[in-house]
Image 1 (cartoon, rainbow, N blue to C red):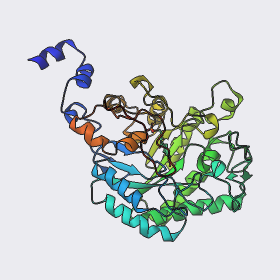
Image 2 (cartoon, rainbow, N blue to C red):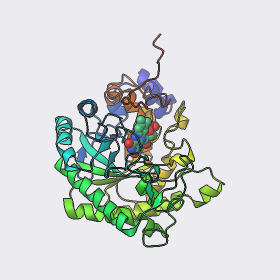
Image 3 (cartoon, rainbow, N blue to C red):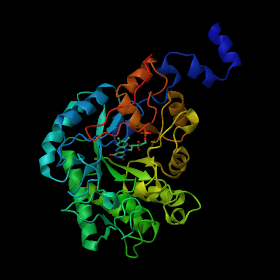
Image 4 (cartoon, rainbow, N blue to C red):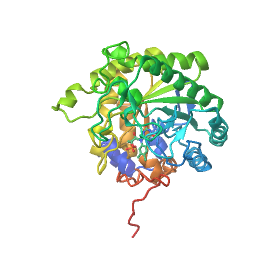
Length: 395
Ligand SMILES: Cc1cc2nc3c(=O)[nH]c(=O)nc-3n(C[C@H](O)[C@H](O)[C@H](O)COP(=O)(O)O)c2cc1C
């Protein structure tokens, strides 16, 4: 009776979000299985790639990483994307990042994928080179990039890559994917976002080349489409290749950098080219370090601030036929469901919320929580290993 009165006089979404239990009944899409790139996922939750600061100095994955991924798998995260894993030494952008630049990494990763596969989750390795934002050291004094455009944050001027270096990089990504497959990963994600090397190529701000690797959208995407072609040659057509890409460099509109930078229309064209090349899912993100806090926004204090790249993912989703994954400030179950219902994305990806609560999916599924407790303070960045360092008031 109460239910009848409620449903008669109040909009369904208000009732659903505030009164009704049984989340799997009333939020059917987010808990619904989906097949993405031949991977059968138990639901639409994705753990977005998150550099955990838990690898050895040379990039060897540790048992702490295995324990973390196992906990996410046990807690029913449909798809786990690992933290940033370097395809070449010198490609790190922070300390204790994972590596995949040598066969010696295969065995330790195999242990980790085995732990995850005891559950129903899938695990994909994110493969990366830091490019213009890579750390400099005595051994690697200058970062590499498509063009020598000074990094406004670090002041470093990267070295423009030669044709030979570009071809070597394509092979390094290919070998990394082959190792990932041998180590038991369900696929790889090419990191083409956030100002690292592959996103440096996509962006006209960081790519000023006039050869076949620069200029038109197609030329700027060529390094990625070539990597996809080579990975497919070496691993076959059934090994999933996902991409995380920027929809924007994130510069303040009206500025000279914004004029030059990657905008959504070029991002949409790039996404179409990636689909054509054989990429089987696209995660939509944005921002490069020089543009400020665009990628990992703080103070997501209300539902209105959530899903800050959703308009971009909708535009990309409208242009491609492969699944689109949305990341960036998503916290509430009702928002997740709305994003799926209204076709902003096919899957929901989160990073910080899973740092704070690795068991978030279980809490949302049981009705114990309606939203993540994450307050987006960014205190989770911790060189000793990621963790939620916000002091919650439990009084
Ligand atoms: C500690 C930390 C490490 C991150 N490391 C990576 C990374 O290795 N690769 C990547 O693509 N994004 C990385 N990100 C960005 C997240 O994947 C995500 O795009 C961003 O945090 C916004 O999503 P959220 O609001 O759910 O945290 C990282 C974010 C955090 C907080």
